Image 1: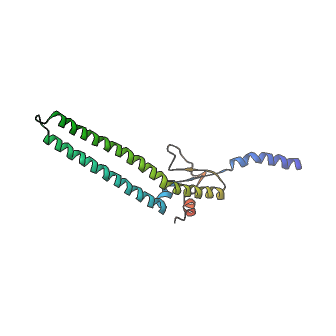
Image 2 (image 1 turned 90 degrees about the horizontal axis):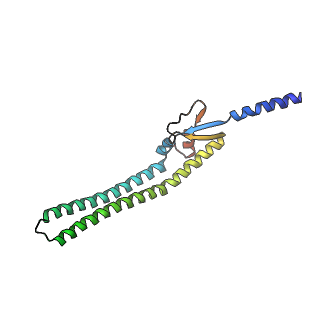
Image 3 (image 1 turned 90 degrees about the vertical axis):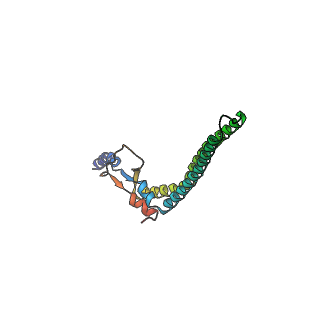
Amino acid sequence: MFKKLILMALMAAPLSIFAQKFAHFNSNDVLTAYPAAKAVQTELENLGKQYQADLEAMQKELQTKGQKFEAEVNEKTPENMRQRRTQELQELQQRIQQAYQDNEQAFRQEQIKKMQPIQDAVYKALDAVLKEGGYVYAVDKAMVQGVTINEALSTDITAQVKAKLGIK
């Protein structure tokens, strides 16, 4: 009898491997409902608008100076004056390009700096839900493209993650 119980336990052991629980969630749903993420998104949009306004002002200055150059320079204009004004326009164009690159880099850094605490909070909530539910792992539907999730075999834990974050 004892041998039969041991044999049954050994045969049932591989079945426990198949009893693993899998979950999925949608981080986009979580982030769009998360007030802290909304606030950061608004801040980043405002920062982007400020950078855009600065670049547009520089572009307008370039356009104005270019029109002035075309209106004032003719065949009677001394060559050294033409070269100097052409160089001024080229330098302004280079400053605009540099400002564009600097703004882009500063925006990315600010985005990373502001989003990191939010991502940490979401991952902490996700980890807690996974541990509480005994899930092996979770797939973020917002991050995987071309992968089909069999939702009949996987549990949607988006609402639980939101609840952990205090989102109603």
